[in-house]
Image (cartoon, rainbow, N blue to C red):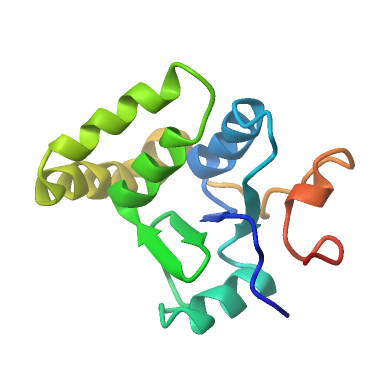
Length: 140
C-alpha cells in the first residue's frame, strides 16, 4: 500500500462522536480533499506504522498529511482550516497554547463514549462515499 496523496483522517470507527464527525467533514469538504479510515482498519494501521505511531488503543483523531501526522487538537484545527466557510475561523484556536487545547481535547476523548455512545461495529460508508475511504478501492 502506498501513501495516499490526499490528507487522511483516521478516526475511531466505534465512537459515535467520531463516526458522526466524518459525514460532517464530508459535507463541508466540497472539493473532496479528505480521505478517511477507521483506526481499527488495516489501511489505518498501515499508515500509523508507516509514521511511527502506535496501532493499539489509540484514542485520538489522526490527520496524515503527506509525510506529516497531527493528533489531538492539532489535527482538529488543521482539519477545520480546510473546510468550507465559516469553519476555518475556528483555526484561531491555534492561538490557545497546545497544552490547554489538548487538555480540552483529552477531556472530551475520555468522556466520548459516555456522552455519545459506542457503536458495535465500525462506520460503514454508503456506496456514494466509499471512494473517500481507504481500503474500499484502489487509491493512488
